[in-house]
Image 1 (cartoon, rainbow, N blue to C red):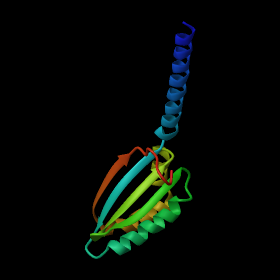
Image 2: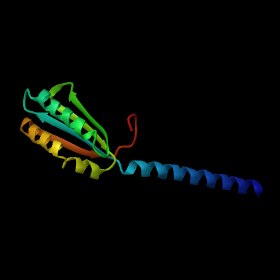
Image 3: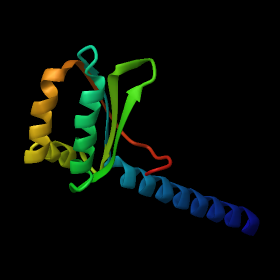
Image 4: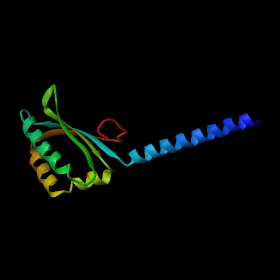
Length: 129
């Protein structure tokens, strides 16, 4: 009986510790907000658009909640600019869009963009987070 009791106690302790660890992990990641965006520039305007988005990365990197703002160009199409964003929460990302410098850069970029796709995401982890 003592052995079974110890096994049950051990199992309960292991389970409660595991649940606590998973809950803590989910809590720390659950408020993060990610965004994957693809901007297609007018033919031949990809580099110009990328430069504006790189300027935006410099501005937002100093704003509250910005963890990652990565600008890339598609290997197969120089007019496709890819953005990966990770923020502490969605509110910080939305607040960044109201920043005066960000608004100015958005207004400069708009005429260059012919298409865009946005996919909100929930960052789970990995290098850089």
